[in-house]
Length: 259
Image (cartoon, rainbow, N blue to C red; front, top):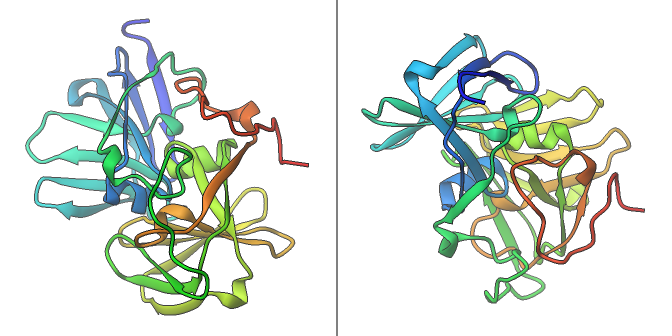
């Protein structure tokens, strides 16, 4: 409904905003930068500055990703939130950060040619077993390597993952002892409400890994440089998926965690 106020925030609440409808429908971007920062691919709606107001910003960190635009994330929990084109009087923001029903839909996908090799429709060549995969954040402050291939990749639509990634997450399990850090100068950790731990880059906001309370460890598929060798195999917590997108890839879906 026009002129209706909507509210949004990061997961920890250190960044919050209000925006007045109408909003632009959602654009899903598969560029290397959006995949690296969100951990999968990013989705964004947008509004003119006149309709948008930050109500809390003590956690807000801006990262200059290119001469054309800067990206905003929460420096406390790592949630990917904003994209601001230089000189443009409107701001793009994550629909995953919005509270309640958005009433939006994905209008188009862009830069799909930069999408991950783990997408169901991808025919990209996979790295051979025995090779090492390399992962990194967007700014290069964090880098690591791990065994190839990634294997089965799981998309999670829980409220926590959607608020942190801005859309929904995609990650693969790994024995944490097999991950070798090359650099972690800007690594930050956030303890989630569910008592897990998330690792992200404090400088650029790139999502890197998740450690569950029982010690299970997973790496964000978008953090891998180049081919992962993995494949998306299922969707979990679909009971919490966003109203602005549908799941049409034919993969198994589970309302909560998979059995």
